Length: 143
Image 1 (cartoon, rainbow, N blue to C red):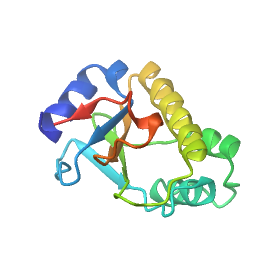
Image 2: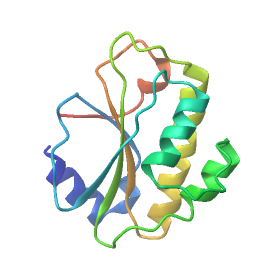
Image 3: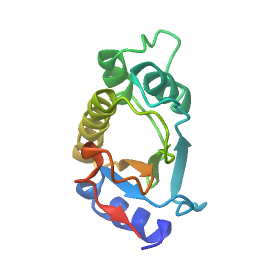
Image 4: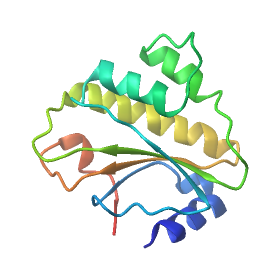
C-alpha cells in the first residue's frame, strides 16, 4: 500500500485511523497528507510530550503532561479532506522507556478515535522494524 492509498482509505473511512508501523523510508510526500514528524530522542515521557507539542504547534500554555496533551489533541484544527499523520522514528538501538511509549500510544490512539468520531482522520506512524518492544507488536505494519 502506498502512502496515497493509505490516506485515501483513512479519509474514506476515518474509523480505520489509528496507530500503524511502517518501514523507514515508506513515507512519501502527498497532497492528501499533512506529515508532522516527532523528533523525540530518547523515547521517554518528556521528549515525547515536547516533540508532540512542537510538531502540532500546541499553544504556549501547553503544560507538557499527559492531560494537557489530551486537551490540545482534542482542540486541533487542520484542513478538511486531509489526513493528519504524525511520524515517530524508532531507530535500532534508540533508548526507549517502554512504559512512557505505551502511555503515549494509548493517548494517540484515543485521539485518533476522538477525531474519527468527528469524521476526521488522524494517525500515528511509527517508522521502525523493531520487534523488541512489546507495545508495538499489535500494531499493523504498512508495506
